[in-house]
Length: 91
Figure (cartoon, rainbow, N blue to C red):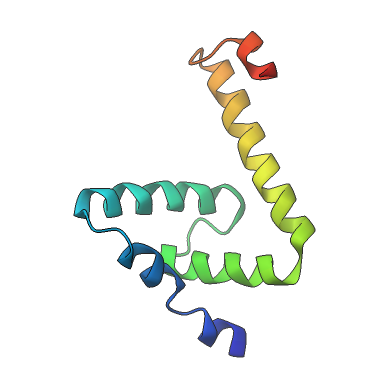
């Protein structure tokens, strides 16, 4: 429980650094998509951010795999929808 209390303001701190309201909105939307990929999508963004930090601090391998799977999904999804070519996938 101490970990959650320590990280309660992590999302607020992240968003505080952004000055433009439109940038905050876009970053929040993209961060929600990132968290929805591998965390419980029914949770609000604030809870997802705390859960993510909790997982990151416990297991660096989980973190690495999460990022790799997210990037792989994004790349493959973009190829399947013809946003990029399969040759670009190798790059």
